[in-house]
Length: 134
Image (cartoon, rainbow, N blue to C red; front, side):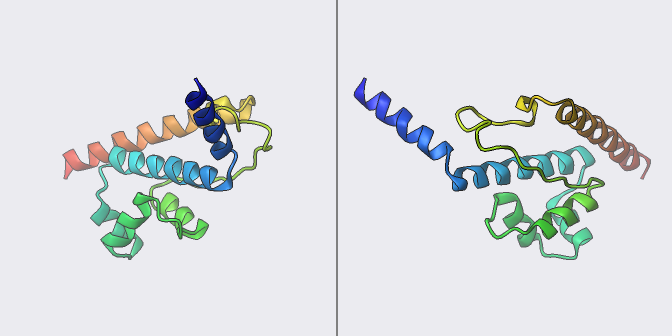
C-alpha cells in the first residue's frame, strides 16, 4: 500500500511539471503530423523535399526533438494544408487528469476538433484520389 501511495504522489507531482507538459505537447503535435502525413500519403522523404530540409530533420522532428521551433511546426502544418493554433489553459485545469482537447469544456474546442477531423479525412481522400489518377 505504501509503495502505491508513493508512486501516485510522484506521478501527480510529475504531471504538474513544465517538462511533463512539454513532452505531452510534443507527443500530441507529432501524432497529429504523422496522422496527416499518413492520411495524405506523404512519406518523410516527400515532406522533407517539400520543406527543403533533410529526411533526417523530419525524422528528428517526428521523434519529438526538444529544439523544435514554433516556426518549424507552423511551416510543417502549412505544408500539410493546415494552420497551427496555440492556446493557454489555466494551470488549475487538467493537472490531475490526462489533458486532451475533448476535456476542455468549451464549444470552441469541440468545433475545432470536429473541423480538424473533417478536413483531415477530406485531404486524405483527395490524396488517395490523386494517387489513383496518376
